[in-house]
Length: 169
Image (cartoon, rainbow, N blue to C red):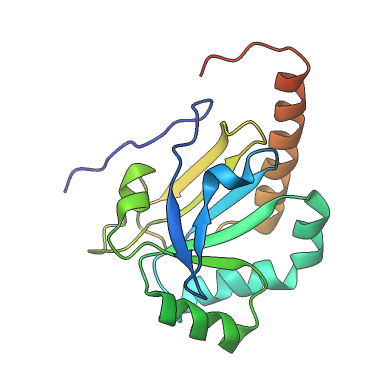
C-alpha cells in the first residue's frame, strides 16, 4: 500500500462537503473565519475511538472555550454516526466519509482497508492548515491538551496572518 502524503502544514485546506450524523451537508468552506479541527478516526464503537471521542466529550468545556469547531470524521455511515453519537452523548458533529474521498484528499488513510487513520488536522480562520498529526496504525489516541494547544497556536497564527504577516499559500 502506498501512503499518500496529502496536505501539509501551511497549505490551504482543500474544501469538501460530507454528510453529518443527521444526513445534512457540512461544508468546510462555510466555516471560513473560524478555526476548525478535523478529528479523523477509524470507526464508531471501537475501543480506542470510543475512548478518544468520549475524552473530547469530557473536555468539551475546554474545547468550546477555544472557539474552534470540532468535527469527527470516519468512513462509517451517517446512521452509524447517529447511533454512536447518541449512545455516548457526543457533543461534536460526526461526518461520514464512506467513499474515503476526504480521507484520501487529506492523506490520512489507515492500514485498515476502507478506514481513516487516527489524525488531527487544525485549520486556521483563513483556511490554512496549522497542525497535522497522522497515526496510520491508529493505536494511540491524540492527547486533548496537545489538540487544544494546537488550536490556540492556529488562532494566534491566523491573527498574525490577518495582521499582515505574509504566508505562501
